Image (tube, rainbow, N blue to C red; front, top):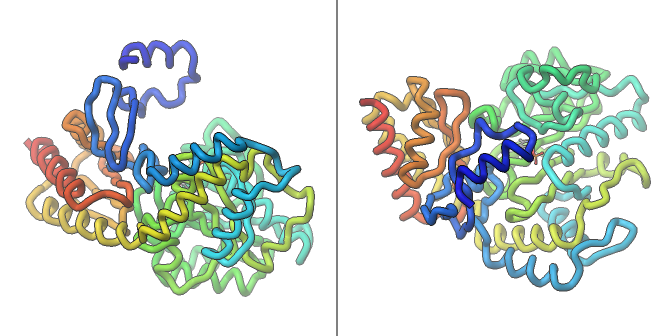
Length: 401
Ligand SMILES: *Cc1c(COP(=O)(O)O)cnc(C)c1O
């Protein structure tokens, strides 16, 4: 299938949601940090499939083998039954995070579960008046209605009101605003440890510490959305481990399945005891196939120390980007936490840079019209990092002319 055929089929049969962001290529195959389109062109994937999902690279052999094995044995039974992959996955996540799991199919669903859990926890501890959830402006928590209400970006709300009530948004990293917003009605503070979609802005240590303290004072849960930051990308297994703060609830998705859709909410005690049978459920949640994929992905992340690799290769990229910044008048700032990297441009040339990079075989993301975002896979080699830097440096130099 070529790009014209793809566009015609999209126009005729898909809701018009993605056409402005779609790149002009039909992807056919992936391996590690590389993708190939149907024209046979090769790309260096610095976006992990576009949205930070393929942190293990494309088609990691151990994940593919686990999927093949599981697919030949049992694809699905619902939660009316036990399956070993689901229980082994939950066991592993519990060991990593010290809580118990609800398994689902996406990031938004993991956050929905966390929102319901926080409400139920407060309901049981205090009563129905303790329902507010404080989240940050510029946050991103997903597109389903409650996750959307949690998302502190009015542009995503427009046209979809009324949204579920009880969400309060405060400026990120503003301790005083947080103190002002949290009170006896607060059942949770929900935060990304590093703002992802908005462009790699890490929480300050004081901010997360204040969030933890406010939760303790007011009997609220600290929910950390690690859907993008979790599982090694920032150079630690979980981004909160860069801080001296412990969450009550962590949500995961994106890289969790090694490329297969799966999400998880992990709740520590006492939050883990808030739900009772029947309070929440998912037909597909923790199904055998995605669970087997996620179990294999977690084994790879731990055994190959991908968090450590993300820290090292992220540092290499950050240094390379700093060197580009020093020479190029176009790069204003580089923000990097492991392999979550944003490059602020001094001029609104991000769309051009992204297209030109793709034309030269490098895939990058944009945030707004003056920011690039890089989310390379944790398996990126030093040679691939240097090749990407060289291509990006050339494009930025050309953009300046
Ligand atoms: C991507 C993302 C989500 C939403 O995940 P989906 O799987 O698209 O529903 C939520 N929170 C954060 C921080 C994300 O990066």
